[in-house]
Image (cartoon, rainbow, N blue to C red; front, side, top):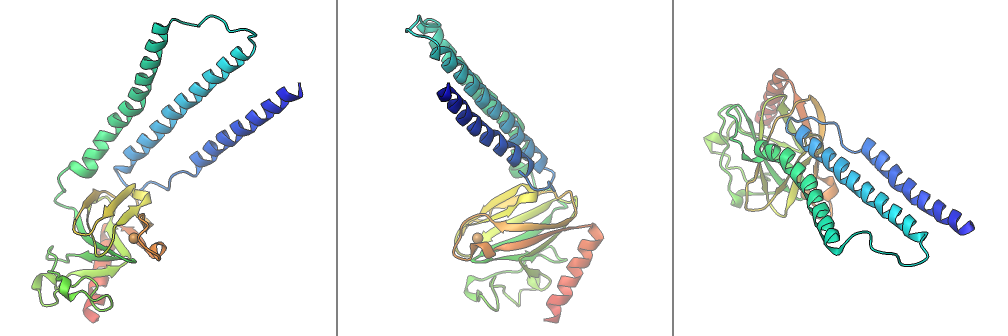
Length: 273
Ligand SMILES: [Cu+2]
């Protein structure tokens, strides 16, 4: 009697911990959504949580039932089913689980992938060049002419010219450079070209469900549409060195006129220098 009680209490404790963890985690799980493609990513995560979580719970309930049923037997009884049926059931259940989990993810995820990685860059996209380094984000806008000025690795100087800008290139005259500070207009595609000067960093905007590695020698791009104004956090999601935690930036989503004002203020501040 005591043993049974003990067993029940222990199993209740673990079940409670598990269920409590899921309830707590599901409530505080994801930061407020602020991009168009992010809804698809959230749908995929929710789908996985519900289906795989459901399969997991069903599996354990069945296991619990069989243990309970088996524990009341005193002798080894006949098999529940023939070997052939057993084999068929295991195979079919395994395949069904894979189809539910993987099939669902593909069905929900492929259109998101298409929008995020495989569609042409819209012509009205705001292009921003972001160069990660230990331990900051160098942000560059092409300015009114829409062209970035040349850079030269020979000219890189961490205090005076972190990007190695060629100062006398006419295309670069109107470029706007900021540090850890990005602004974009709402509801317009943003195209980010990522670079790294040293090690692998990862450009992570949790609210926009955007995460892309910045790899030295490559220029990966991300295109997404912010749908909500406000100030959001930019973090580096790759442990990139001792001050990795300092790679925090701000991502401001502004209305179109506010964004134009912001660009003007930045340009004025640059020419005043
Ligand atoms: Cu980093």
